[in-house]
Image (cartoon, rainbow, N blue to C red):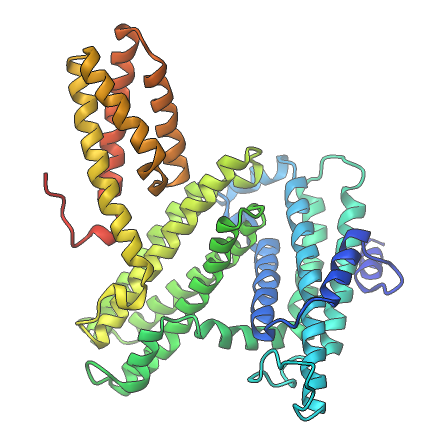
Length: 465
């Protein structure tokens, strides 16, 4: 009976979407043409992220518990939040599908008109209409519509939802999304779009053969592994945009679920490559692959067992922002640095700034932040030993200047902690209360200084007192 109800919802053409979605679609209809390849990438990203979230949620965000412990926790917790997250993503995918349908229609009209339609600019002249068609998108739209309505019918009562409800809901949806004809076309288009996300300087190295001459085997390995990096970094760029634009961040967990899967595949590829060719263990490429697998495994544990574990259950938006920002930064910077290492296999003289110009601003900010933290730490320790009025006024001045400027170079979670210490220090008049606060703040600043000093962009810039 459950299977019949699910099938009816997923394939129904008589039901209608919520009015808000219809309003969004009406607004999109009158919007200017969009780049079809970018729409394909983003729709594929969210659909793939949704599939990963539906099939591997507990593995990606299960924390450090073993399999049996995760199963015990899953059996007793409320899964309503996961239902709400998937609903938000389904609504987003529905909107993206409609926008893509419109863009493909314009593309088809342009091609049928021989490119002579003066009122329409071709949104993507490199996209062949054979990659994806409106019939496939219409089928996808029907699946999404049925999934949204089924989700709303399950959650409408407000009762607690268990793991059995989640499994009954997620398993058939994952199968339908995976087998949808549009999914294959979207994947092909988005992979080509993601490869363009490799730094231009890196692509020039591969195309022109600058630097060291590459053997055919090494070129084949690079051609296999580099698109994986490009797709991970392109996926993370959407999270960065969400952070910059102050968008709701919990849906980004679905992107992180996909990135978790992509990193696992990258580690598996690197390890299999090393096992297949043990005689090449001493080559530079093998060393780079070994380092990639080792570093990626460490970053997975840091990000998914600590930063992202339990984020779906958080209510406070600042806490969610802090965890998502840190998770994004750890993964993005790690994979950028790893990509720099592969580029230096081809051209040892190439600098990270040539591949990622944003390293320049990160370096400048990190240098300023490190020096400022050191100066404030010295002042705090001095005032702790001698909390006289003049020294305290100097500390207050330093803290106010820091709060108005350099503090913004910190991660959000560190910024919040520093702000609380600053408020306590500025509000304390009694020396008995102030000295313990200064002692705790000094200990925290020492740890924070050490963390900043370990930033990858500062590797070639040792601190000098």
